Length: 344
Image (tube, rainbow, N blue to C red):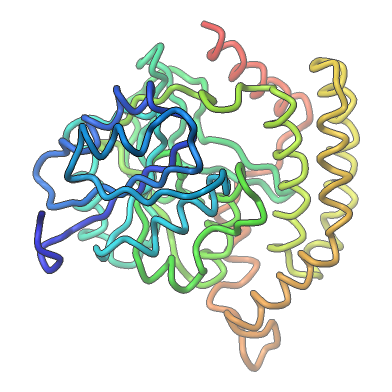
């Protein structure tokens, strides 16, 4: 085992009944080159023998075994507590990194000490010429998506992004401590957007690292457009906006937020032939007041919104790193492009 003082990064892998996927991904994660790292596997109450299998096949991996499925957010937080390195990576159990993935992220962290989040270049496992994620994009309506998702691989460059997809990301320990990690109430989906937004309020920036390449089986745990995924996305979007929007900008943008959502909701219901999207939004609204109180707590933690004690970042600074507002047709086309890429 690498001595603690020599560790450059800890890698946290959360899994739930994913033994078959880990058989492909874990050798690549353990075998990262040119970086001193440890691997922590958080087993979220699996019933397929994952924990015992990992202990037998990969003795260097530290296994954190939970009694039940606590979700992606809470599972990662348990891994963060166990991590011993100054940099902490997250990677999905269905993601297979290139041998120098982690070393590329660590090098970027060394070169950019002002940044706290580092996004990988994720491509589809079934078609490595198509991008799955190049960081997180967010628009002023609180609509978040994987940057460049579904587009052909291109010669892009490293640069600033709003945040990093937790499917394959690197975070500074100081950022995770300052934000208390993922919000466990989200369970799964958009917890990485929420973390990025809260970290941005605290003054942290994010960078995309093109050489940190990962092949990813998109939505292997919960299928794209499944009722469970749709429910959590709908619910968590309400919480995401409630938590992270200051009151003034929220009131200004709220009419458009509601209008865009009202336009998209019937389309989603018709396409999926179920009410999961509606149920998700209603579940989010039932706890709306609780999440607005979370925003008040964030304001206290990062400095009040008064002129005498400004936040580490202002709304205008956050708005500058958000995507431009697109028309509903452009958003529909983006979703259609993603669905086509997944079916190819």
